[in-house]
Image (cartoon, rainbow, N blue to C red; front, side, top):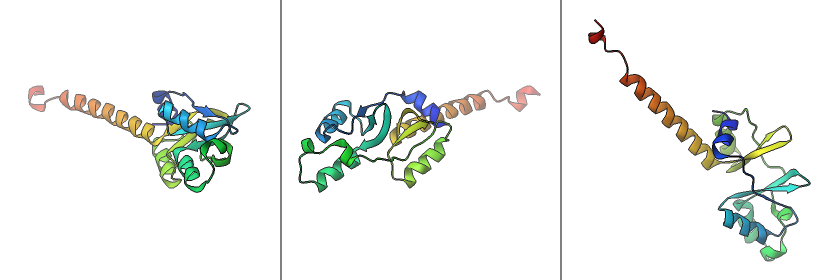
Length: 149
């Protein structure tokens, strides 16, 4: 299974924020949408990622209130990215090695979506379920040697 198939399964909906917006706005957005990451966009291009990890680190280490901190101050400016032709196993390995729960998927300069570790788990589970059904069907319809004789 490739990353492009996972994007198709989950959909390519992007949730975005601008770097000059307040961290409080981003937190509200993440809570309302029930998402763990936002793509930080400026002039139609991805300039970073904001995940709950950056939010927690910002809240832990700052004296300023979230209203006084901008997304651009706490975002990951150069996030690890995936590409559409990447295999799911390579994607999982990359996510584990880089400790990234959310990866933007880029096709050249085009942002196709963001894949979470949960999206990968769901896609792999669906693929295994399909393979399991196919194997059971194959075994069920296996020709019986005695009845063939």
